Length: 369
Image (cartoon, one colour):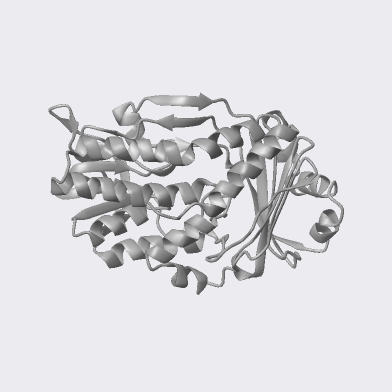
């Protein structure tokens, strides 16, 4: 019988398991993937996210992988430059093959039991409460494990969220699609984002001397992009003076990756014997690159809530209700702004002004969880 079982071991699940284990709780974390492995990602971790890695004692290890610190950020929205003032610790854009493995190893080092290649098939209930998980390990052997609380950190298509029928609210239909690819020899001093004219263009310097280049466009253009992703990206980058030339001078490494988009939503992130973290509980368009930082914030806040509930300092329901309130408050402004920007990828001046206010508030907010 574990104190907690965490389903999903990426940016929300592994830090959550690590923090609970550091607090002395018995934790099992499972994931269908084995690590290192890749996943669709914006790559971007904000200064707030880097500060959390620093607080957890992991930032030095992440930086030792060779990911460059983002000392310069250029953001142009509808032709206007947005005020982005990098502060220490800097934003970073790590490859997920590197970051996620580091987080999984940190959870194991803290004392959490990690099972990779584990598929959850069923979520057993007892007396109206989630009682554990039932699934298959990497050898296909059937396994049942029990816990006081089961946390779904398994993404927007969460098995746990589906099993408990977690209610959704503040949903917004999807309006975008996109592709990205890695390039060597691309000259980039930092992160760049160009938004307007029915598209968003991204530049993310990452590990191994590579730069991730991406394009986001209205959802009805997905088939057009799929026919030749690199040519479509080049067409978009050519609309920004100098950007297209830099892309032509670089060499693509590997195949482009794409996404068809998904509606944005909040889910109620807790109930009898269960909780949700990261994209399992809250998902928005990837346009502003907030997903990994949101996942880290969830991990810290939810770990504190579960620790309070398991220790009996407050009831588990009260602790998890506070977690939900804090999560919704912390993400509300960027959720609204992102949805407004992604609606047609051609923001009005007042939307750009709202974004500037949101970025300013982010840069001055303390990185506490």
